[in-house]
Amino acid sequence: SGDCFRLRVTPDRMEAWLDFIGTPPASWDQGAPARALAEAGVTFGILNEALASAMAGVAQGVSILAATGDPPIEGSPGSIERLVNPTRHTAADDTRMDGSVDPHEAGSVVRVRKGQRVLRHIRPRPGMDGVDLGGRPVPAKPQPDCPFPEAAGLEPDPDYSEFRVACQDGVLVEVGGRLEVRPELVVKGDVGPETGAIHFPGPVTVKGSILAGFQVAAVGGLRVGGSVEAS
Image 1 (cartoon, rainbow, N blue to C red):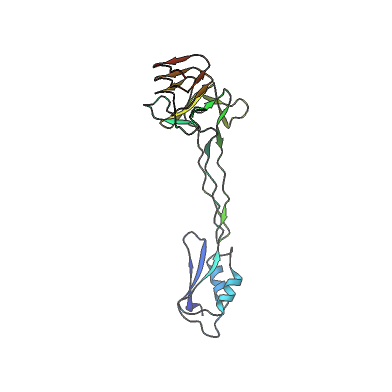
Image 2 (cartoon, helix red, strand yellow):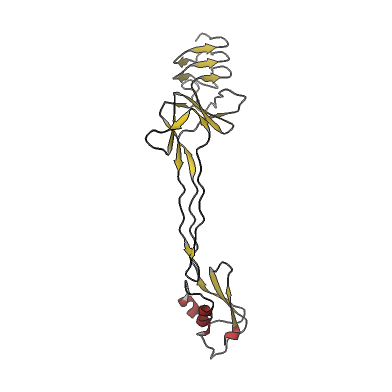
């Protein structure tokens, strides 16, 4: 009666199928599939209840999943979490405002204080091994780690090595994917509706003018390349 089916085990030994190539006779040996599984070394994940119920109505051309392994559960790679989103600009811009705040209340630059946590390292999370049809472990893939990126103005947190902190007061910027904490805020153009009022805990250089109705509060000096319009 075993001539009416063939046992097919997938190359990864995670599934075993009974492919019926003929219609079993009424008196066929229903223990033949179990013996075939044993001869093939299938000892884990045998679907006995599904196999028994399928046998009642099996016919030529039917394939029955007879056993399945437990696939490994993959982990997750290491990563770097940004605790502060920087002001993004290109190398051609010193610091370009994005206008995302009320232009008469605050500048849109991202300010950080010395010791403020900026980056966090998240370690890789290992996966869980699986089991194949023979009861052998199927290792989960190792997960790569992610080192801290190169950055200027950041240093290891003295208390927790998984953090990087600002080593000075300044503005956090990103140039070409590289983070920097700059002690001086440089505004390429005018201080006006595009930038909003600026309050910065360090020196500020405005290459343009300070338009009427807008203020710049700086600690450590203010340089203006253009004019300061009367409010």
